[in-house]
Amino acid sequence: MFDLRRSDVALLQAVSDHGSLHAVERGGRMTQSSASRRLIKLERRLRTPLVSRSSTGTELTEAGHALLHAGRRLVGAIDFAMATSHHRTDTRERLPVVQFAVGTERAYGMGRDLADRFPEAVFDVVPGDSRDVWQRFERYAVDAACGWETTRRPGLRRSEALVRTVVDEPQWVALPRDHPLARQETLDLHDLADAEWVATVGGDACDDQGWAFSLLSPAPRVSFTVRSQSAALELVGRGYGVALVSPLSPEPEHDLSLVLRPLRQRLVRRLTLAVDPLVVPLTLAHELCTWLRYGYAQRAAKRNPVYAASASFPPLAEGPGRPLRARPEAGASSPGARGPLPVLLSELHWTGPDSDSHFEAEHLHLLRVIDRIGSLNRAAATLLVTQPALTRRIHRLEKGCGLPLVYSTARGTSLSAAARRLLDCTGPAESRLDELVGRMRQIAAAQSAGVPAASPIGAPIAPPATASPAASRAAACADERSNSVSASVNPPARQGPGRCRERSAGR
Image 1 (tube, rainbow, N blue to C red):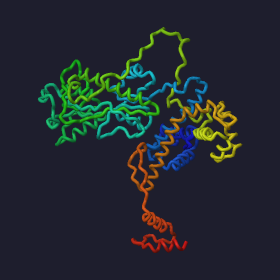
Image 2: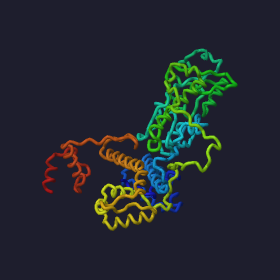
Image 3: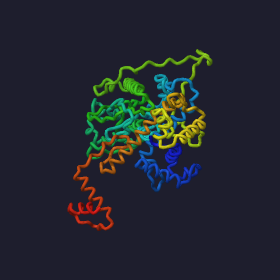
Image 4: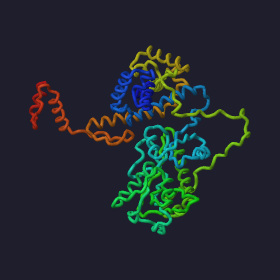
């Protein structure tokens, strides 16, 4: 197991929050030079850069954000097990708090609908446009995300995430009602080459609009630029041009001055749901995707019945997947008759290095070795320490956390119930950290061997190919020539094999 300490997690968190090592020194945890040395040590152990330094400050790389997320998960799981050691309920009776990033257009009122439909989790809805949604998910700031992505701009690169396609939505064109092409049922994009456009900059539709403009020659004329589809629809209704919008864009009820028409060219954007399987179970993710599809179909039938009845409408679920939860009535049950509440489980509720917890991630490995071997003597040999030193270390841990961890039996040494519960709570987070560290080292090994590693940290990397014996001997000769002190700066372009054999024989 990789030894990631609480101070390392706090250091990465400070760099992520403030973008500078000065903040770590101002916080009083360590000096700037000590923080820099610790980061360099972490990077050498992982063989992967964790921070990028520039004139504007210090930022975490993709690997740094991934390591911070895995470390927070593990430290939070340890603190959860320690804080709930008195909890007599089953460890499975937990209520996860899921940070859910969604688009701004569907965030309003979504929290109550999620609470009614999925009582086994609490969804903390974080609104934003699609760029912010995927950026939050890529940097492990949220546990789940639902947003738009296009073929020109894939929104997700985390391979360990569970990804589900909610719907593939074609883009439509909004025109003024008195436009000459408004009477046609379907429009061709080239028929709008001479029209003036209302362009949407930023947000979800920017890439789709840029792709549509690239298909027109010469470049279309843009009369005005806005940042939202609602403003674009308002300008189209006033006669300032045409705009590329979603077929579910609500038409103004008080103003029927515009129409929506489909395109023959299929400009599709995809609504994608991505979840962290460590937080959101697979069954819950599947039911959440089904519920989102049903909600899209309901909105389409209400806002644009023509689109919902067209052949281009994607096949979606007919039902929401599960019935609504019945809300408890006021005064139906007395407070005394209520059972024990489930334990809240959230990554945000982790304790920093200033807490009284003496338990580190390396101590989990110690307990797992003792549990696997069943003897302190043999476990000490495996851990490369003496048996008295291991005993003293366990006593210090028990005194620090206030819980018995091991006890002696006739057959050897066994873990206590509190220690087994600790390993059970931290198992998934520990496995996630080990997988991440192994993936980082595999990518570093592939890059050092000359294999191009274009995939991100979350993508698997194939092992490097084994070189042939002839290539290995040639590489050995080349290394020997480069390490020789008497080698010339510009060696001859062609070297005979006899020179290598002579040096080998001389040694």
